[in-house]
Image 1: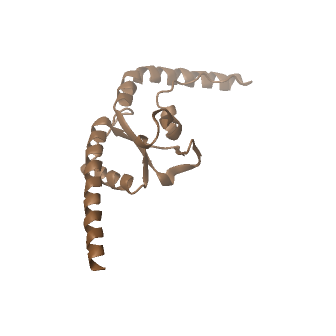
Image 2: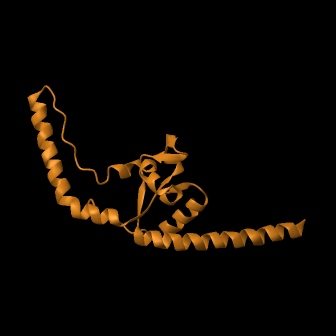
Length: 152
């Protein structure tokens, strides 16, 4: 699999994701305001970033090595631009486990230094499954609550 290929989630992976989002073990990009997404999911700040020119040092040998690495990185960046742009256009949702949140938050949101990416197609499936799951849980809780009160 290349750098910019996205893997589709299996039905089992989506079911687990739905359940853990419902149980509040996972934070998703749907839970933060649109402009806060990049601040919450920090890796997204760098996904499309171009390489930066190295700073100059006193040592010419290091300068040449840094400059060569920069040129190599820039060429790879330019070569991968179409794939990277297609990849970014196919991002439907970001998520991460709350346990992976950093020690500080921003504007009341957790901050993550890692995240998982869900494609647009899988995001549509996730939304459908999540809505069905919510209805199922409501029905279950209604029946379970009704039988519990009948016993008392």
